[in-house]
Length: 333
Image (cartoon, rainbow, N blue to C red; front, side):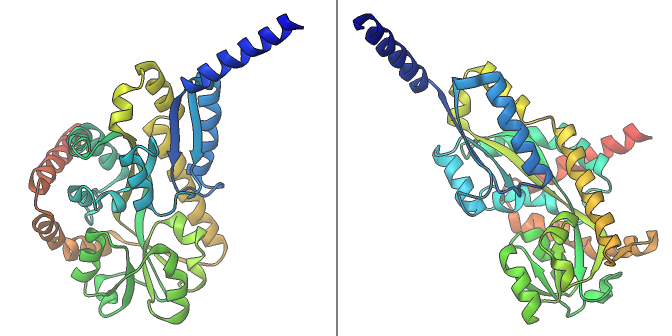
Protein backbone atom coordinates (compact mmCIF):
# COMPACT_ATOMS: atom_id res chain seq x y z
CA UNK A 1 0.00 0.00 0.00
CA UNK A 2 2.80 2.38 0.92
CA UNK A 3 4.50 1.62 -2.39
CA UNK A 4 1.23 2.34 -4.28
CA UNK A 5 0.81 5.64 -2.44
CA UNK A 6 4.41 6.46 -3.29
CA UNK A 7 3.80 5.78 -6.99
CA UNK A 8 0.61 7.88 -7.08
CA UNK A 9 2.34 10.74 -5.27
CA UNK A 10 5.30 10.58 -7.62
CA UNK A 11 3.01 10.54 -10.67
CA UNK A 12 1.05 13.55 -9.46
CA UNK A 13 4.24 15.41 -8.66
CA UNK A 14 5.62 14.80 -12.15
CA UNK A 15 2.29 15.74 -13.78
CA UNK A 16 2.11 18.91 -11.71
CA UNK A 17 5.66 19.87 -12.56
CA UNK A 18 4.99 19.17 -16.24
CA UNK A 19 1.85 21.30 -16.16
CA UNK A 20 3.77 24.11 -14.46
CA UNK A 21 6.33 23.92 -17.25
CA UNK A 22 3.67 24.28 -19.95
CA UNK A 23 4.04 27.34 -22.13
CA UNK A 24 1.03 29.67 -21.83
CA UNK A 25 -0.89 30.06 -25.10
CA UNK A 26 -4.08 32.07 -24.83
CA UNK A 27 -5.58 32.97 -28.20
CA UNK A 28 -7.98 35.90 -28.63
CA UNK A 29 -10.15 36.65 -31.63
CA UNK A 30 -13.70 37.48 -32.63
CA UNK A 31 -14.79 34.75 -35.06
CA UNK A 32 -18.26 33.34 -35.62
CA UNK A 33 -18.15 29.54 -35.15
CA UNK A 34 -19.61 28.87 -38.60
CA UNK A 35 -17.31 31.33 -40.42
CA UNK A 36 -14.09 30.50 -42.27
CA UNK A 37 -12.07 31.97 -39.40
CA UNK A 38 -14.13 30.07 -36.83
CA UNK A 39 -13.59 26.75 -38.59
CA UNK A 40 -9.89 27.46 -38.82
CA UNK A 41 -9.67 27.94 -35.06
CA UNK A 42 -11.26 24.51 -34.52
CA UNK A 43 -8.59 22.98 -36.77
CA UNK A 44 -5.90 25.02 -35.04
CA UNK A 45 -6.88 23.73 -31.60
CA UNK A 46 -6.81 20.13 -32.77
CA UNK A 47 -3.45 20.55 -34.51
CA UNK A 48 -1.85 22.16 -31.46
CA UNK A 49 -3.11 19.37 -29.22
CA UNK A 50 -1.85 16.73 -31.68
CA UNK A 51 1.60 18.24 -32.19
CA UNK A 52 2.39 19.88 -28.85
CA UNK A 53 0.18 18.15 -26.30
CA UNK A 54 0.72 19.54 -22.83
CA UNK A 55 3.86 21.43 -23.80
CA UNK A 56 1.50 24.38 -24.12
CA UNK A 57 -1.38 25.45 -21.89
CA UNK A 58 -3.87 26.27 -24.65
CA UNK A 59 -6.77 28.61 -23.88
CA UNK A 60 -9.04 29.42 -26.82
CA UNK A 61 -10.89 32.73 -26.44
CA UNK A 62 -11.74 33.12 -30.13
CA UNK A 63 -15.47 33.78 -29.87
CA UNK A 64 -15.19 37.34 -28.62
CA UNK A 65 -15.03 36.41 -24.92
CA UNK A 66 -12.48 39.15 -24.26
CA UNK A 67 -14.76 41.84 -25.69
CA UNK A 68 -13.80 44.52 -28.18
CA UNK A 69 -10.77 44.36 -30.45
CA UNK A 70 -9.26 47.13 -28.34
CA UNK A 71 -9.53 44.83 -25.32
CA UNK A 72 -8.03 41.92 -27.27
CA UNK A 73 -5.12 44.03 -28.49
CA UNK A 74 -4.48 45.28 -24.96
CA UNK A 75 -4.52 41.69 -23.69
CA UNK A 76 -1.87 40.67 -26.20
CA UNK A 77 0.35 43.67 -25.49
CA UNK A 78 0.13 43.17 -21.72
CA UNK A 79 0.87 39.45 -22.00
CA UNK A 80 -2.51 38.32 -20.69
CA UNK A 81 -2.97 36.66 -24.08
CA UNK A 82 -0.15 35.45 -26.27
CA UNK A 83 -1.64 35.54 -29.77
CA UNK A 84 -4.67 36.78 -31.64
CA UNK A 85 -6.13 38.15 -34.86
CA UNK A 86 -6.78 41.90 -34.92
CA UNK A 87 -8.24 43.91 -37.80
CA UNK A 88 -6.22 46.67 -39.39
CA UNK A 89 -8.88 49.15 -38.32
CA UNK A 90 -8.24 48.40 -34.66
CA UNK A 91 -4.47 48.10 -35.09
CA UNK A 92 -4.26 51.49 -36.81
CA UNK A 93 -5.02 53.17 -33.48
CA UNK A 94 -1.65 51.82 -32.32
CA UNK A 95 0.25 51.99 -35.64
CA UNK A 96 -1.49 54.68 -37.75
CA UNK A 97 0.60 53.83 -40.82
CA UNK A 98 -1.42 50.60 -41.15
CA UNK A 99 -4.39 52.70 -42.33
CA UNK A 100 -2.66 52.92 -45.70
CA UNK A 101 -3.56 49.29 -46.35
CA UNK A 102 -7.23 50.31 -46.46
CA UNK A 103 -6.70 53.27 -48.79
CA UNK A 104 -9.34 53.22 -51.56
CA UNK A 105 -8.19 51.52 -54.75
CA UNK A 106 -4.64 51.06 -53.49
CA UNK A 107 -4.73 47.53 -54.87
CA UNK A 108 -6.25 46.53 -58.18
CA UNK A 109 -6.56 42.82 -57.53
CA UNK A 110 -6.16 40.17 -54.85
CA UNK A 111 -3.03 38.88 -56.55
CA UNK A 112 -1.45 42.32 -56.48
CA UNK A 113 -2.43 42.90 -52.86
CA UNK A 114 -1.00 39.53 -51.79
CA UNK A 115 2.28 40.16 -53.59
CA UNK A 116 2.81 43.69 -52.29
CA UNK A 117 1.79 42.92 -48.71
CA UNK A 118 3.89 39.76 -48.49
CA UNK A 119 6.98 40.72 -50.44
CA UNK A 120 7.26 44.45 -49.76
CA UNK A 121 5.19 45.53 -46.77
CA UNK A 122 5.46 42.63 -44.33
CA UNK A 123 8.97 43.40 -43.04
CA UNK A 124 8.60 47.19 -42.61
CA UNK A 125 5.23 46.83 -40.88
CA UNK A 126 6.66 44.06 -38.70
CA UNK A 127 9.34 46.53 -37.58
CA UNK A 128 6.75 49.15 -36.66
CA UNK A 129 4.70 46.62 -34.69
CA UNK A 130 7.79 45.27 -32.92
CA UNK A 131 8.38 48.75 -31.48
CA UNK A 132 4.95 48.41 -29.85
CA UNK A 133 5.75 45.02 -28.35
CA UNK A 134 4.05 42.92 -31.04
CA UNK A 135 5.32 40.27 -33.43
CA UNK A 136 3.62 40.19 -36.83
CA UNK A 137 3.18 36.49 -37.57
CA UNK A 138 0.95 36.56 -40.64
CA UNK A 139 -1.37 38.77 -42.60
CA UNK A 140 -5.04 37.87 -42.41
CA UNK A 141 -7.63 38.41 -45.14
CA UNK A 142 -11.08 39.82 -44.43
CA UNK A 143 -12.20 40.27 -48.02
CA UNK A 144 -12.96 43.42 -50.01
CA UNK A 145 -14.83 46.46 -48.75
CA UNK A 146 -18.06 47.01 -50.68
CA UNK A 147 -21.01 49.41 -50.49
CA UNK A 148 -24.52 48.53 -49.31
CA UNK A 149 -27.56 50.79 -49.40
CA UNK A 150 -31.31 51.11 -49.76
CA UNK A 151 -30.84 52.29 -53.37
CA UNK A 152 -28.39 51.43 -56.17
CA UNK A 153 -24.96 53.05 -55.77
CA UNK A 154 -23.21 52.75 -59.10
CA UNK A 155 -21.37 56.07 -59.33
CA UNK A 156 -19.80 58.52 -56.87
CA UNK A 157 -22.60 60.96 -57.67
CA UNK A 158 -25.09 58.52 -56.12
CA UNK A 159 -23.48 59.09 -52.71
CA UNK A 160 -23.89 62.85 -52.58
CA UNK A 161 -25.52 63.75 -49.21
CA UNK A 162 -26.48 60.09 -48.74
CA UNK A 163 -26.15 58.94 -45.13
CA UNK A 164 -23.60 56.13 -44.96
CA UNK A 165 -22.08 54.41 -41.96
CA UNK A 166 -18.32 54.37 -41.65
CA UNK A 167 -16.07 52.64 -39.19
CA UNK A 168 -13.60 54.79 -37.26
CA UNK A 169 -10.91 53.78 -39.77
CA UNK A 170 -9.59 57.02 -41.22
CA UNK A 171 -9.22 55.67 -44.77
CA UNK A 172 -12.88 54.66 -44.94
CA UNK A 173 -14.09 57.95 -43.48
CA UNK A 174 -11.96 59.99 -45.88
CA UNK A 175 -13.13 57.92 -48.85
CA UNK A 176 -16.81 58.47 -48.11
CA UNK A 177 -16.25 62.16 -47.38
CA UNK A 178 -14.36 62.60 -50.66
CA UNK A 179 -17.38 61.38 -52.64
CA UNK A 180 -19.63 63.77 -50.64
CA UNK A 181 -21.50 61.18 -48.61
CA UNK A 182 -23.05 62.19 -45.30
CA UNK A 183 -20.72 60.16 -43.07
CA UNK A 184 -21.91 58.69 -39.77
CA UNK A 185 -19.25 56.88 -37.71
CA UNK A 186 -20.73 53.92 -35.83
CA UNK A 187 -19.53 50.72 -34.21
CA UNK A 188 -20.46 47.63 -36.22
CA UNK A 189 -22.86 46.44 -33.53
CA UNK A 190 -24.94 49.61 -33.93
CA UNK A 191 -25.52 49.35 -37.69
CA UNK A 192 -28.73 47.32 -37.68
CA UNK A 193 -30.43 49.69 -35.25
CA UNK A 194 -29.18 52.69 -37.25
CA UNK A 195 -30.63 51.25 -40.46
CA UNK A 196 -33.89 50.41 -38.72
CA UNK A 197 -34.32 53.96 -37.37
CA UNK A 198 -33.15 55.68 -40.56
CA UNK A 199 -30.03 57.16 -38.98
CA UNK A 200 -28.10 55.72 -41.94
CA UNK A 201 -29.15 54.37 -45.33
CA UNK A 202 -26.13 52.19 -46.01
CA UNK A 203 -22.42 51.87 -45.45
CA UNK A 204 -19.24 49.94 -46.13
CA UNK A 205 -18.58 46.30 -45.27
CA UNK A 206 -17.50 42.97 -46.73
CA UNK A 207 -19.73 40.46 -48.50
CA UNK A 208 -19.57 38.02 -45.61
CA UNK A 209 -20.42 40.56 -42.92
CA UNK A 210 -23.23 42.05 -45.04
CA UNK A 211 -24.83 38.63 -45.14
CA UNK A 212 -24.01 37.41 -41.62
CA UNK A 213 -25.22 40.60 -39.93
CA UNK A 214 -28.44 40.62 -41.96
CA UNK A 215 -27.81 44.13 -43.29
CA UNK A 216 -29.48 43.18 -46.57
CA UNK A 217 -32.88 43.17 -44.86
CA UNK A 218 -32.82 46.98 -44.57
CA UNK A 219 -30.35 47.78 -47.36
CA UNK A 220 -30.97 45.35 -50.24
CA UNK A 221 -28.54 46.90 -52.76
CA UNK A 222 -24.94 45.70 -52.66
CA UNK A 223 -22.33 47.26 -54.95
CA UNK A 224 -19.13 45.34 -55.64
CA UNK A 225 -16.82 48.35 -55.65
CA UNK A 226 -13.95 46.27 -54.29
CA UNK A 227 -12.51 49.63 -53.34
CA UNK A 228 -10.37 48.56 -50.40
CA UNK A 229 -8.92 45.48 -48.80
CA UNK A 230 -10.05 44.50 -45.29
CA UNK A 231 -6.86 42.91 -43.95
CA UNK A 232 -6.00 41.89 -40.44
CA UNK A 233 -2.97 40.48 -38.69
CA UNK A 234 -2.11 37.44 -36.64
CA UNK A 235 -0.04 38.90 -33.81
CA UNK A 236 1.94 37.57 -30.89
CA UNK A 237 3.17 39.23 -27.75
CA UNK A 238 6.80 39.92 -28.68
CA UNK A 239 8.25 39.17 -25.24
CA UNK A 240 6.49 35.80 -25.27
CA UNK A 241 7.52 35.00 -28.85
CA UNK A 242 11.14 35.89 -28.15
CA UNK A 243 11.46 33.35 -25.30
CA UNK A 244 9.25 30.58 -26.69
CA UNK A 245 11.29 27.61 -27.99
CA UNK A 246 11.60 27.89 -31.80
CA UNK A 247 10.10 24.45 -32.41
CA UNK A 248 7.02 25.32 -30.35
CA UNK A 249 6.55 28.65 -32.10
CA UNK A 250 6.98 26.99 -35.49
CA UNK A 251 4.38 24.34 -34.62
CA UNK A 252 1.90 26.97 -33.39
CA UNK A 253 2.23 29.00 -36.58
CA UNK A 254 1.98 25.89 -38.75
CA UNK A 255 -1.21 24.90 -36.94
CA UNK A 256 -2.72 28.25 -37.91
CA UNK A 257 -2.35 27.45 -41.62
CA UNK A 258 -0.45 29.23 -44.39
CA UNK A 259 -1.43 32.68 -45.55
CA UNK A 260 -2.25 31.24 -48.99
CA UNK A 261 -4.53 28.56 -47.55
CA UNK A 262 -6.28 31.03 -45.26
CA UNK A 263 -6.86 33.48 -48.09
CA UNK A 264 -8.43 30.78 -50.23
CA UNK A 265 -10.87 29.91 -47.44
CA UNK A 266 -11.91 33.53 -46.86
CA UNK A 267 -12.32 34.26 -50.56
CA UNK A 268 -14.36 31.13 -51.10
CA UNK A 269 -16.60 32.21 -48.25
CA UNK A 270 -17.09 35.61 -49.89
CA UNK A 271 -18.12 33.95 -53.17
CA UNK A 272 -20.54 31.71 -51.30
CA UNK A 273 -22.06 34.72 -49.54
CA UNK A 274 -22.57 36.61 -52.79
CA UNK A 275 -24.17 33.57 -54.41
CA UNK A 276 -26.51 33.12 -51.42
CA UNK A 277 -27.46 36.80 -51.53
CA UNK A 278 -28.31 36.59 -55.21
CA UNK A 279 -30.40 33.49 -54.57
CA UNK A 280 -32.25 35.41 -51.83
CA UNK A 281 -33.18 38.15 -54.30
CA UNK A 282 -30.69 40.78 -53.15
CA UNK A 283 -29.57 43.11 -55.94
CA UNK A 284 -25.82 42.87 -56.42
CA UNK A 285 -24.32 45.51 -58.69
CA UNK A 286 -21.19 44.69 -60.69
CA UNK A 287 -19.42 47.81 -61.94
CA UNK A 288 -18.51 48.25 -65.59
CA UNK A 289 -14.93 49.26 -66.43
CA UNK A 290 -16.04 52.86 -67.03
CA UNK A 291 -17.94 52.97 -63.73
CA UNK A 292 -14.93 51.66 -61.85
CA UNK A 293 -12.66 54.26 -63.45
CA UNK A 294 -15.02 56.97 -62.22
CA UNK A 295 -14.75 55.63 -58.65
CA UNK A 296 -10.95 55.45 -58.87
CA UNK A 297 -10.74 59.03 -60.12
CA UNK A 298 -13.10 60.33 -57.43
CA UNK A 299 -11.15 58.60 -54.65
CA UNK A 300 -7.66 59.52 -55.90
CA UNK A 301 -7.16 62.56 -53.60
CA UNK A 302 -7.70 60.37 -50.53
CA UNK A 303 -4.22 58.86 -50.76
CA UNK A 304 -2.45 62.19 -50.32
CA UNK A 305 -4.83 63.31 -47.57
CA UNK A 306 -4.36 60.03 -45.74
CA UNK A 307 -0.57 60.25 -45.89
CA UNK A 308 -0.61 63.82 -44.60
CA UNK A 309 -3.06 63.02 -41.80
CA UNK A 310 -1.12 59.97 -40.63
CA UNK A 311 2.37 61.49 -40.74
CA UNK A 312 5.10 59.38 -39.14
CA UNK A 313 6.33 56.73 -41.56
CA UNK A 314 3.29 56.98 -43.86
CA UNK A 315 5.17 58.58 -46.77
CA UNK A 316 7.84 55.87 -46.68
CA UNK A 317 5.34 53.03 -46.37
CA UNK A 318 3.29 54.38 -49.27
CA UNK A 319 6.43 54.62 -51.42
CA UNK A 320 7.25 50.98 -50.59
CA UNK A 321 3.73 49.94 -51.59
CA UNK A 322 4.07 51.75 -54.91
CA UNK A 323 7.43 50.08 -55.50
CA UNK A 324 5.78 46.73 -54.87
CA UNK A 325 2.95 47.53 -57.28
CA UNK A 326 5.47 48.37 -60.02
CA UNK A 327 7.32 45.12 -59.34
CA UNK A 328 4.06 43.18 -59.57
CA UNK A 329 3.18 44.80 -62.90
CA UNK A 330 6.65 44.05 -64.28
CA UNK A 331 6.37 40.43 -63.13
CA UNK A 332 2.97 39.98 -64.75
CA UNK A 333 4.11 41.52 -68.02
